[in-house]
Length: 191
Length: 296
Image (cartoon, rainbow over all chains, first blue to last red; front, side, top):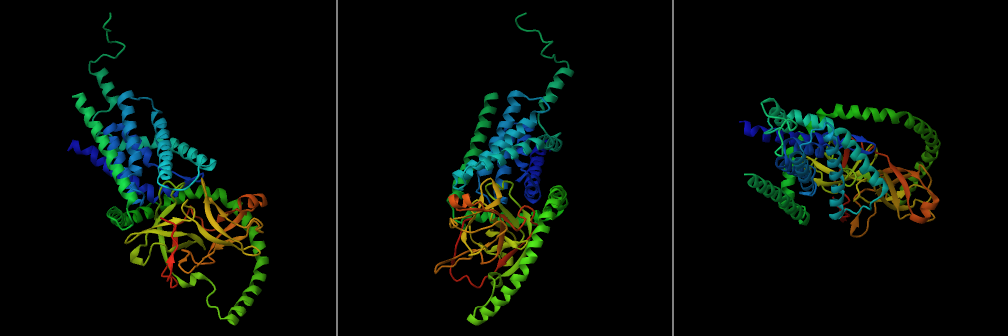
């Protein structure tokens, strides 16, 4: 039962994200741009669950968004795979413990999604010259994404809490409290 | 063990990327009636009731956020509207006289119908969804589809102004491409002295700033002039939009910009960012020719 908890929760989270995004969030504009929560949720899942779940979740959410919004299939899923995977690799390689890390990851995810989507649309033939106004809106979108990154991360963490296979912070805490030595106390091989 | 995990991770990643690229390539090269589009249409049909329910349930949230922006804009708009009302009151008298003259002259030359909208039935539809990225794809989803007689290409209006046209139809919902979408272009007429015609396109990066392009360099256009759809018709093609549907008001008509770029700036009449309902004009009787398409 525990093995299925994370996929089930992520499926519900992905479905809920896309439906709420299209039905409500996209219709709210701040400084002329609409807020996109999907890359933030994908990045949060990558940060919490790892690269593989992050990439699979990104693919699924992206594909669902492309289907539900009648966009070219594969565009959003390709971008979200990268976001979920990179966020997960960051967790696996750096084990980021700083409380503001989701903020930076959220900003990077929003920037990648916004610029990547624009580039893909240009490649697919949308004829729209790059202008300062477009760049300004991209910057505003990234700033809004950054502001929302922390609450979204907290929300996603609350949803998947308890079903994660291995929480890095919990793992480190457990190592200190169950007899394991901290790196400062551990005798080095040279001494 | 570690190598096996790494290999598995890379294999899954490669598989996901390859599937995405295959879907992208297949979808891009397909026509509107192809299998992937049909699957998409089926999913949209299934999802429409859920999105409609979510849209209604989350309306208070949207209204709450909208309230802050609306309050900030209300005072400025009130002053603008008072000034506009005073100007319009002066115009009404002249227009009433012109209307009488027009009706009399139409009777004399045997013309019927004063507005292209008369040829359409109006279907009210609720907005139930919208893509997050409105910079490059500005569309919205409404809860009326082929069941309600909606077809691809049907014009859509709201708040007394043109909104866009239907670009994708499922059984119980459809997608409307707004006039602020980069792919949109509408032939328009500026109700200035001589009725100059041009092409309405959104300004890149600021979709709510519309541009009327390809105007004559010596056009005499002033701020607050009304822009309406041109509704052209040739022997083979006719515009998606009926003639004389109000679209917007001129916000900036710089003579230098007109001389160099042949364009003026227009603000749409319909509040395109806060639409809850739209009207789809269905069942035009005058569609014997092929309709001009501007893509989904």
